[in-house]
Each structure stands twice: as C-alpha cells, then as structure tokens.
Image (tube, rainbow, N blue to C red; front, top):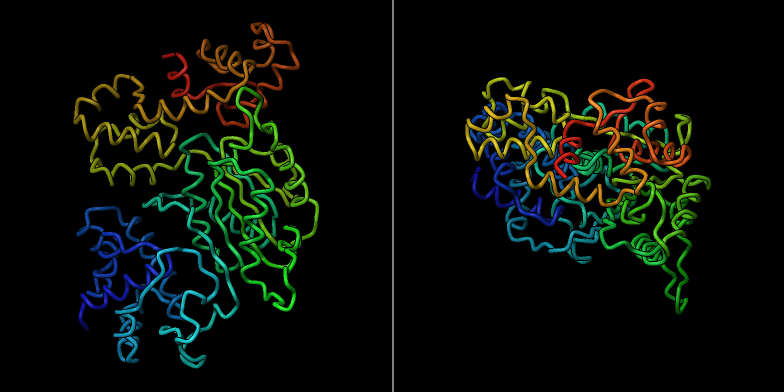
Length: 458
C-alpha cells in the first residue's frame, strides 16, 4: 500500500466532509495508524498529549465511517483503505473534486449522474446513513485539542437523545469552554438528527432574518411540488415537528442589552421571547442548544430537572485535563504545578494564557506566580472587560462590595453596606450568579480571585 497515495485519498475524504484539509496532527494519526503504531507512540513522535491524538483519531474515524459506509476505527482503518484500493475506486477517489462549501444535504455533494465512489452494496457495508441528512456546520469553529469534559458530554447526550429535551443552555464565564464542549458534542451526536445547523449570533440577526435562514435550510430536504408556481414555506415550528433537528445558537448574549440585568432583550429583539416559548411549550422532536454569557430568562428561571428545558453550568477542568494543557505547551515538568494553577479555577482560556506567558517568559514567570501573584495576560483582561461592560450599575456596585471583602459575605452584610435598594440588590445578585461572575457558598457570596484582581486593577 502506497502511504502517500492513501494519505492523499484520506485528505480528499476529509475535505469532502469538513471543507478542510488534514492538519499536521490528523496526518500524523493516519500515518501512525497505517504503520501499526499505538496512540501513545504517535503522541510521542508528534510531541503532544495522548488525549489529543485520541480526540483527533475519534474525529477522523467518524468522518471515514460516514463516507465509506461502515464503522471505521483505528483497528480496521488500514483494512478499509485496502478494500477501497482493491475495489478499483481508489484512483477515482484520488481525483475526486470536492466542493469548497461545507453545506451538505444527504449525498447531494456527489454529482447526480455519477455513483458515490464510497457507496457499496448493503451486503458489503453498513448503510447507517440511508436517511436524508442535512448539515450546515460552516459556522462551527475548529478549536483543535479538546480537554476532559467526559461527564458533561455524557450529561448532554443523555438530555438530548434519551430525555428529548427541547431547549438546553450551556452557561459559564468567558473562556470556560462552552463552545469547545458543544463542538465535541455535535461531532458525536449529529448522526442522530435529520438536520443539524450551527448559527453564530455575532451579527445579532432579527427574529425574521433568523427564521427565514432556518426555514430555507430545512426546506432543502423537502420534495417540493414543482407544479405549484411559488411553494409556500412552512412555519418554523412545523419543520421542528416534522424533522428531528439540532439547532446550535452560539453567542446568544448578543440578543440582550448591555447595561441591564442579564437576559433583557435589546429593543427590536423581544420577539425571540415568543420563539423560545414555542420551543418550550409546543410538542416537537427537535433540540436547541444555546451558548453565551447571558441566556434567555425562560431558560434560567427553570430549575425542575423533569422539564424539557435544562441548564448546564460549566465549572473548571479537573487536574488531569489541566496537566494536559500545560503538557501541550511544553510545561509538563513545571515545579509546584498545583500551587501555580489553583487561582485560575480550571478555566481553559485563562490557563492557556498563563501557560503561553510562562512559555514565553521562561522560569522567571513561575517564580512570580509562586509568590501569590495573579498574572492577568492582556487577552484575559480584554475578555473580562467585554463581560463587565455589559453589567448594570447595581451589578457593578455589588461587585465592588465583594472586592472589598477578603471572605464570603452574607446577604445581610451586603444590604447594610450597599447604597442600592433591597429589591434591586437581590436582582443584581441573581443576575451576577446567572452570568457566573460570582459564586454562592452556603448563605454567602464571593468573587473569583482572578475577577477580583481584574476589578481591583481598574
């Protein structure tokens, strides 16, 4: 088997599915697999963690399973490629032309009059993708290595596939890994849906614009009656009832006003309240995943775990995952590791920023960190600034009160020291908890050390 030709074909297959060529790690995984190397050997050769290699491999095997029509794993990848080579379709695959746009509906990416070169008869391969599936993941980011979060993935998978939840919010302070977790989740469960779409709300689409885009996407799989001059599109809820759809809404906080308590819609965006109410109350078989610094109040107000609405608040990574991050930055042997990373609360973005700082500055940075000094890299400051700019005046006053205290503070003391009236103070505390900027410890409230440091520095 010609290794170079196999990798060329593999690259074509991956590009057809994702719109992206093999990266260096993925190529290393395939090369090592074809040479009978273990994940541990591949990780050592590539100088990265074994978990990163496993994650890259898992992603690749899923892609090849879908394209080749059988369950592909590390153990049978070489055999599958040999079968493809022996089927006389290998040379065809080497020259196959793929579309640059990753907007796939079923098998529509193959020209209608040319057979799919990877499609075998039912006796040869498992035809698990026989149903028409539509994916638009063109806005889903490629975030590289994924660390930990196995319990969170299992919880979300259970909520979506077993309990059929309709509306799920993933919350957590900026950098906690909401997007990375959701990307990993979508890759694992997308085959369970007829339609999957990832929507970024960076441009703050109006409800009319958003619904029009979704309806156009869902209607791609419809068999339209061409005898009707202008077929009428169904309302959005009808598509959610008719098909099993997964809709991911990223940066949902762009629907809400700055300078207000969390979850207050911007003028002109109040109609989204009706949409989320429909998703909650009307019977359908689809699921919406929401991510952002703020969430619709219809989501955060629900605490009943028997509800079709759920909220998963992300906390910090465990120590094993944190060590993997530092290992990928070449800091696996750093001294006093736990002491250095403890103030950063397992936040992946904060930890990567600190690891990058240590890597660039060398040993002097670790000496500073061991003296109980909290470092605030510029990218962390910018991220916290964006969140703090969204706060109401009452929330800012509560944070100022908590920054002045060395220990958690109970509600009575906050009321005594505050210039804010009682009802506004309570609402401000509730809003800060929803934003994950403060924590509740029993009957007291406290602020994370890094946020305290940031606010003090201002």
